[in-house]
Length: 274
Image (tube, rainbow, N blue to C red; front, side, top):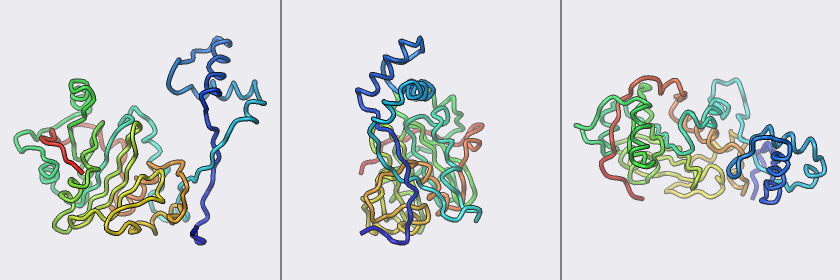
């Protein structure tokens, strides 16, 4: 049943069917505009097409989504807007995992990620990008940003932190860990673990389906984002919402500036499973 205490902010988006995309591409080429054969069509071309073809805009199919937003702005709480930067693919790309870990020792976090002590060193963005190219996008490097009692493990083109086996290891002995994983070619994921157990885990785009030992553990946080945990809604801004939620739990806000300069990191020696 829907939660009466939640009033979601609903937004409408056009559904770009194959036929509509074909029409936009053909129109763009006829206007002498540079249009890719595949992939995303530039927003400027889409806007120009609908301006010139209002009938197509009126006839286009639409989908209704819920936009996560802080219900009480100005209270010092992180908001999804604080993480709008993750939409810029130049920062972390279309695939990344950020794991907020309640442990002050970067080397211990790397060890729990199965980085061998002799492999730990200072890594730059350039080092990571070179490794990704050399391994055909495998993304087996993890770096750690120190933020005090909580640290953030950064995996560009990686996903080890979202594995339940990794979360159990990262949160053992009374700790906590929250993994937010963007995977544009698969499912995004938010998982929260405490004291060696995965408490809850779900796709932040469809938070109505949750698993874990206490699937509804973060329901109150979802409500504060204007998300009804009892509904089957699709979320318009799932990753910024998930990252804001991770900030609420950890008390830290991660920014692109934290990636500047060399960071302690290394190669995951053996992948996690599960």
